[in-house]
Every structure is written in C-alpha cells, then in structure tokens.
Length: 523
Image (cartoon, rainbow, N blue to C red):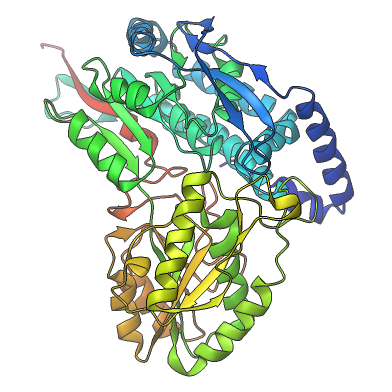
C-alpha cells in the first residue's frame, strides 16, 4: 500500500493553502524564464536535435511559445525502435528490485519538483492549478504504486504445485520486448508517464510519442529517468501522428502498444498493429459518461457532482460526465440549481489562483464546439452557455462557456457521440429501469454515476450499469477523479480493450506474458 500524494488535500488539512499558492506562483516565474526553449528527441540514451521543429503554444494564450520540439522523421522513429530493441535484453535482465528502486527515486524527485511540473501542465494544456497539481499527484502515485506492485508480487514469479514429486514448477511473467506508448493531450504527465512506467518497470523497453499539443510534460519524465536506466530502454520521439505514430504501429519490431485517445484512432491502430500477428494493444478510448439522478437524490450533492464532472477541465477528460438522466418530477429544480452553480464558475487564465475553467485545447476543439452548439439550437434547447468567449483576456486563447442542453431525443448525435468539450446533455426519465437502459445505451462504458437515497436503486445501478468505474452520491465529482490504488481506471465496451485498470492490481500484468518453468529431478 502507498500513501497517495494528495498535495491540495494535505494543504487544506494543514491550513497551508497560502503556502501552496506561493509555491505555485514561484514555479510559474521559473517556467516563464524558460519560454521558447528548444528540446531534443531522446534516442538510444542521447539527445537528438533537428532543423525541423514545431512550436508548442499555450491554449490559454497562443502568443506564449512554451517550447520547440523536433519533428521526428520516419528514419529517426525507426532508430528509436531499433535502440529499444537492442536495449531490451540488458534492461529486462535488471533485477526487479533495482527497477522498483529507480522508479521510487523518480517519484521522489517528481514530488520535490511537483509545483514546477504542475505549472508546466497548467501552461501546456490549460488545467487550473488544482487540477494540474492533481495530475502530478496521480503521476507520482503511479510511479510509487507500480514499484510497490512489482515488489509485492516478487517480480511476478510464483511457485506452482508440481504435478509429480520429482518436479519443481513455477510461473514466471516475462516482458514482451519493445512497447510503443502513444499518449493524449489531456493528461500529458499522468497518462504518458503511467503507460510508460507500466511497460518500463516490468522490463520492457519503450518508445514514447506524446501528443503534439503537450510534449513538454512527458519530456520532463524521460529526461529525468533515461540516464538512470540502460541506454535505449526509453526513447522519446515527437512529431506528426501520421509519421511517428504510424511508424510505431506498423513496425514488426514493436511487441506491444499502449494507447490513450479517440475510439477511431485506437481501433484503427489496433487493426493495423494486429493485422499480421496477435500482439497486445492496451487502449483507453474515451467515454460518453452518464449520471442518473433519482427523485430521492440530494440535489445539492447531485448538482455539485455533475457540474464538477462535466465542466472540470472543460469536459476534456475521458471520464467527464456528458449526459445526465434526471427523474422528470425533479428535473426543473435540478436544472435550476445546476445553471445557478455553472454560471458562477470563473473562466480565465488557468494558472491564476481563482480560475476554475481555462481554455479548451485547440482550434479544432473550438470548431467542434461551434458545430455542437448549432446542432443543439436546431434539435434541442440550450439552457445555459453555447457561446465562444473572444474579448479581453479571452481573445488570444480557446475559451468557451460551459454549455447545458436539454430536450434532445435520446438517440441524438450529441447524446451518443463523445465531444470532449464542456457540453452536457440533460435528459429526463420517468421509471428507474428506463434510466438504466438509457445510460447503458452507448457504445462506451468508461465511468458512470448515480445520486439516490434509495439503497435498492444504488444496488441495482451497480448490478446493471455497463461501465468500468462507477460512483454513487459522489459530490466531489460524479464521474471523474479516480485515485490510483483505490479506483483502478478501466473502460468497458468501446472505452477500452484490455479490461484491466490503470492504477490497479492487474495493470502491470498486461505488459508481461507467462512462462511455465519445470525442472525434473530424476530419482
């Protein structure tokens, strides 16, 4: 068992929130002094620079150039794969205790630098300072938890009961080889590092391609660990998905893929990667996460939980609540309370102390928001929001107002398709059984929540809901905020392939394959 990092919770408990904000502001000052810096690829334990590069702009203010990264070529990506392949035998032979210790050292270093790293995340992808710190806490928890899991399972070597008195038998889980890690923009630290750590700590070698919107947070990790491990055990390549990502997925020398992103890209990658041979492809591919609110619900808790789940980080979490099913007789009161709370959310520069909601990630997301709003106006009713913020401090970023929509048909595109935006569809139901059916009527099955004071309804919800991460009466967030170790993060249906959750007891085993070993001692 590990102690979760819980930086903000501990600051509140210890009455040290002022110190928290001072440290965050100081970290921002340090980060500002590094704007525009050029960073390398890491291939075979060496820094590789390139004439061809791309700029990383803050979505909060696109005038800010956070960093410049190389546009890796196909040849450089192949070199990274080759380096990982050549490094595998040495790294996999490293005793598991040594590997666990390295990851604990990195976790401690991350903990010491977490304000600086959280400031990086806030600038890079637009999370407010508490959400950015929450992500760094999760990153640290992943590093420590996986080290703990590796040791508590004794490197996944387990004696088995022999079939014969003259035999000694055991089961050994062994690494596959080279893993390609393809990570998203929304958790550029936690997901990129969590997936990479799962592969690396179990003895595999890694080629990491981060999202081009947010490569800096992942670079911090690679830069911290690559000198501590075998040269080439981890490689870092940035650039276009159509070049770098495609090269990784198509390579016969890559033994496994860990991917987080859209369903379309995930399924396409899965088909390509497994076309010629069966190979592990661990994916998390989003959600369309429902919350059911019954007539017995505490509406204060329900509206708090839904608002935080739907609009925290602008709905750009795989676990974000994007559809609500509320019992008809309480729907008007629920909507009234929800709108009242939503309209008081402070929208602004995410790294500022009072901001709740920062920007969405880029221009493509803004265009998707505009299209969703037009469709909602045509086929439903916009209860709140629906506008793009353009004036004053908003003019140089991708800011939109959180949006609540009602009166859509249950099979409407906006109710069915993942938007990854601060966009919430509120639907009504009469009978509880209907709410369960509607909540399950989705190709996704990632997270789900319920607010009810009726125990039988809660029991039925847990029994019948088709989702991997489920919550009841959780005011802090109805569908988001899973904690490493406590709530393994796993998707059902088209939300995931493996059925094993990150931050859970079964996660590391996905990066390993079993070998049975038998030694015969003839009498």
